[in-house]
Image (cartoon, rainbow, N blue to C red):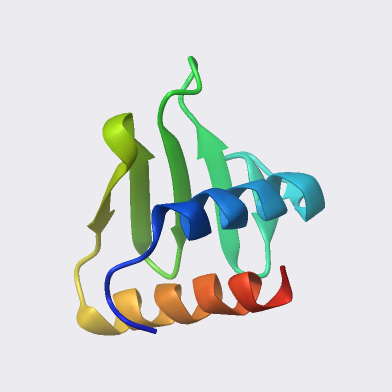
Length: 85
């Protein structure tokens, strides 16, 4: 998977996790990723493998992570969910 993620894929993965995931303290968890949003719903988050993806206004996103391997693991989990949709 290339490093840039299509915004429609982020939204599709978020929706899949919200629909199929199990409730935990942060939001809903599904196949290694947790999805949640801020209180007003304008910003959504995907979290897993030490990575936090923040998707918000103007369909922009940002990945926070410390190590490249964390990002690679996160992208693989994202891709696995995309492939099942």
